[in-house]
Image 1: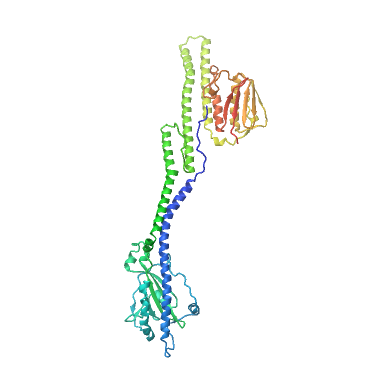
Image 2 (image 1 turned 30 degrees about the horizontal axis):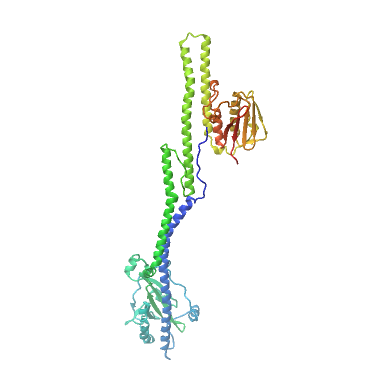
Length: 521
């Protein structure tokens, strides 16, 4: 009996399934994340660009405001109105160079409701503020170019251009500026924007950036510049960079196609092919099963290898069951027929005692043969059901495996030799080999171990006119008339299969010669 020929999957490097899944998930998660981050980053950048521009404009307006206010001073004006700056603020505002960190961030700041309207106030503008009010109107005209709106307030928060006293003092950013700090806020342009913030592609079209800049004179906050503007819409920028966006979209689409094609090639097609092979095996058609052209990833290659191994094992087991069934039926038919015939003759009666004893002996002999046949069938079945992993690392000294066979002298070339077999399996193998030699007339058996091969020779009748390829096949025997079952060598081969070893009969000038080859390593 030979081992089933199984064509193994080539052992090539392939990415692991976990790596493929990780890359795919990361790519899928990255697309929306990057898109959201890019939109938010673009809008945030435009917002900060607007904030920076407003700070520069407000600084210019505040300088002009303070200069105009100081030009109206007379000898009667002994005190400057407004909040008196504490020392740290005086140092900051009196420095030759002032820098401002970004005050607003869309990821941090909340967009507030629309800017509150000025409310009527019982306070009045001072004479000096009334004098400069008309002059500051010329600064407001610059908003036609800068697209910003500006309001000038005095130290009380009153609008310098209002026909009647109107106050912005309750607005948080204005209140902050009147205390010597730069105020900043994000506010919706209208109630509609606040209710429907996601109707536009960019939220930059729905809110305004508001900056309040203190006006300093004689270390006092004499007023503030309240300036605002809508950030540049992201849509305008997108239209200007249409080529870049189209290129990005094309690259993204190409990347998606590449990933999809890779998944189809590396996962889907091999799995479908393996599914079809599995269905063929399930339907009993295991002919021409071979490794696929490619398996994509290592786990699928291992699955394909396991499928081919399973198909080979199932096919071999099926053939073995068929062979065993046919041979057992044939082998049992002869002793059963003899037993039934002898029993019928005994039932007839009136037979001489010698004949009755002969018939009883026939029944006993044939019964023993059936029992011996069934015992060896069970032995070969147990041998084939052994788990190879439990025996792959076994090693036992050869001298401990030697059987005791009457009339047979067994010698070993190296008493310290160690074979890669368990003690039980080694004894079983050598016992069958010794019985086989003794039954063929041998009285000497030599075991020669060379480190990889065990050579067994005897001085019996050998393999005269016997096809060597049939030796080892279940139920093939040259001693059928003497009660041989033909399962001895089959049991030996079944055990050696567990270790990846092979039994090979070799023609010899005198007696029989068997060579057992063990795998290297």
